[in-house]
Image (tube, rainbow, N blue to C red; front, side, top):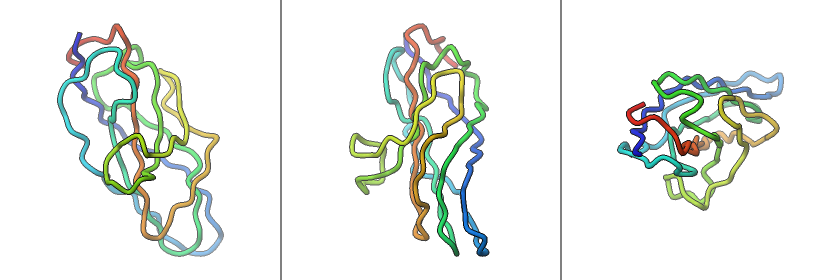
Length: 136
């Protein structure tokens, strides 16, 4: 069975910051190629975003996603949060796994990573369920 990837989301990030004034900027990350994904596929890139800061040091410590697409919790087995680590500008095996969440949970915690002034790119991957519904 082929699952057409349609994974739109709203990102709610939790950042620990010092008391000094600063700005955190959330923006779109590299474009994730569209297309079809076979059911049962693991670590399929689904979304990306960038975080950058100005001012004091900031730690990115939690993330909650809201599924805005048509897929249900039974279409995915696991979600994972990754940080760009190999500086190639795309989701790859050289990126750093920060946290995972079993479906249907869309919340990540238990990690801590610096948000540099220059920014950092993050990816969300999914493990597609073997019985995922085609077209969602």
